[in-house]
Length: 242
Image 1 (cartoon, rainbow, N blue to C red):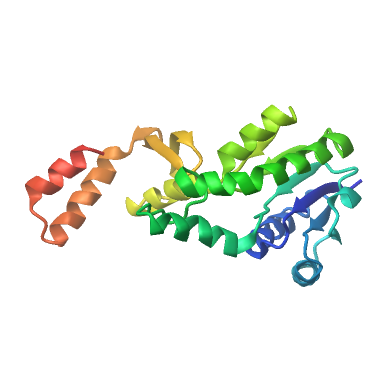
Image 2: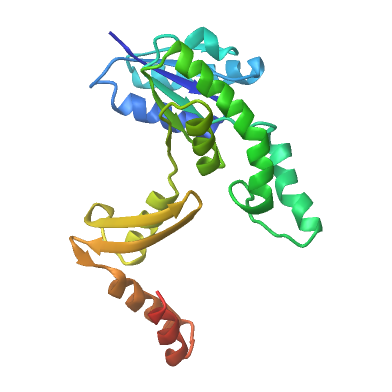
């Protein structure tokens, strides 16, 4: 019996490659069936060929299927992952450039403030529609969302459809990994606790093998400040704020 994953928004080629790479690495533990869904048949065809090439190259035991209609492949799904972007890159650009005309600058603009509101208005109706199909066609599936704005999408689904949805983002994990590299410590020795919303998060507890790691971070900042000929009193004052 194969475990079925439905990936809605497979046109996100980089994310899709990451998912498939992880599945290939674990294909000796479990038999997988991956269903790819995208609104563009041309994109879906290209991504399906790429995925099949990855699978064939590694000789992994993974079946794939594809459809431009998610309702064709949702029945029997064990996991559903959404990585859609309504409007594509052109719409996303407007979330950044239109506010900029009025003095509101956002480097990404996909989660908070004006850009986040604009993106929410495009994304939430589509995501709620997907959630309704999940509830109808595969109610026992575990539903993961990686689309932004993460927090508002998950909240909207919980309120409108009343099914569990789990938002996933690599942001906090990547910062934790960066801090480990910054202080020269193996990533596996570092643990962290974070609070906040997606893209609006604070790491407030950082440890190395169970010991407070913030002194190591502060010391590294002081070293870099000294190397750049920044006055030590100023550097120390800035470090004390961390």
